[in-house]
Length: 150
Image (tube, rainbow, N blue to C red; front, side):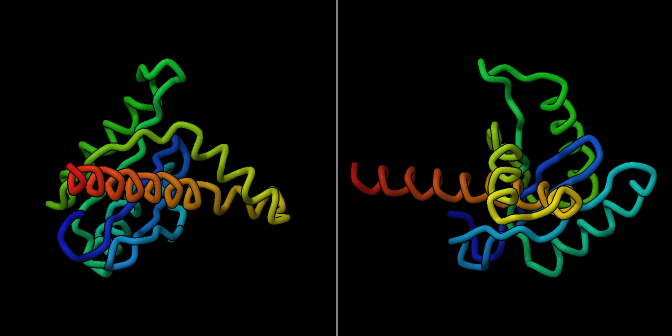
């Protein structure tokens, strides 16, 4: 894994940005909040900086939305652009993780829990960020186990 401290997961959308975090042992991811990009975009960077500091974030994982064939489209380009901007605001290492289907999974999960449309809209991005971050954690754990087995 990475050094002690939390890992932040970010699901970049055109309107909202979902934010999730691991616990300090980097075992489990949980949704934190959904931030707006639009006209209040200037508030996004100070809030992310505050979360990074409050949680002693050691790494940031940004979801990279790939197409079904694995190629990158405009959403992936937006995520890469967001990462470049984020790197101007922090010295925490940033990496990408394939996040295909996380928003759809998050939406289904919230529907199954009986959340109304307005409630889902407010939380789906943060839940998607938690799903992508948990996927990243699980993949790292599997890779570490395979390396030890060799």
